[in-house]
Length: 162
Image (tube, rainbow, N blue to C red; front, side, top):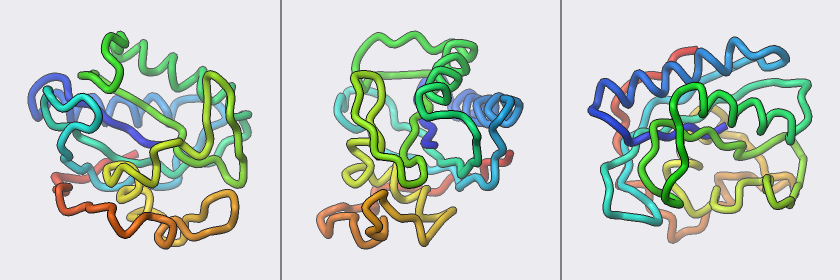
């Protein structure tokens, strides 16, 4: 899972990420195995906003992807997320980036995440916690990331604990 937020000051963003991890960890049928560092990154898509704080969680679950998505969206709402502008400011965002070997393309959920290979703030935290991560087609995520992907804009600012 990928997490991101850019609402509030530094401490509010850190608190949002930690609250999201805590709520995910408390969700039945989800076990957090590892958390990445917290990365600061410039906004992507809609650029007229504050920098984002991003992280990734490696988790095990017996939930189906669509059920997991509903639970993650419930967590976002509980933490105060109200979607307004696509790619705009948010108090929390929790995305399913990869789900084992699952490939899915529905109006509500696309797995692997459609922008995973284009967003350093998504693939860098995943590779930090799982350097051997693979895409459903068997390709190594590290090798699949395009040469043009530049993660130099990312700054590690702290730890994210489960």
